[in-house]
Length: 233
Image (cartoon, rainbow, N blue to C red; front, side, top):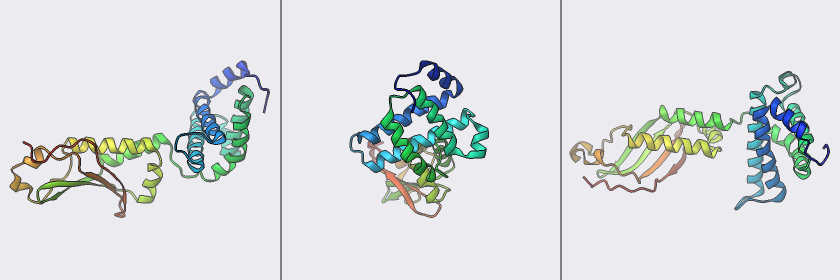
């Protein structure tokens, strides 16, 4: 595609025409480079393809945000516009030939599996709102905190799509920890009134947290590193 010398005029033109897409396209190329070179610590081919798929999805969202070829997007589809953008991008930056060849092979397959995949921003907002409206139950055993169960009002299949975004998971965990730190959970019933408020004042922050979907299916769990004894006053 194009010449092999960076065309500064085309670089400036494309950056002005679709600034967000121009920036995100660089992330797509980096992901394509890692796929081509089989690079990345502890990464597999499947994980590299998934990363490339995620970056392609972000670029598609950016193209819509930049209103790039909106008429063609409606008439000829997302794949056509995506490839047209990368044709322009490759003319501006022609020195990524192996990566462009990989994208030409993989992008059509990626687009067949992109329908319904939420963007990173959408997933982060979804998870934050989900925890805001979740029910958090403290679980006691003989007066000791054993777990916090976070009941979210969504099906596990939908949540699993959002949880594929690591930033969304981090957002959810932070929101859960904030609720627990602020005592925004249901009072436990296992002898809590007989403890004279000791446990309520100083809950153990190292107990397991588990997120449960509407269908009762556990989605994931974690244990925070800090440990505070329930018995301390």
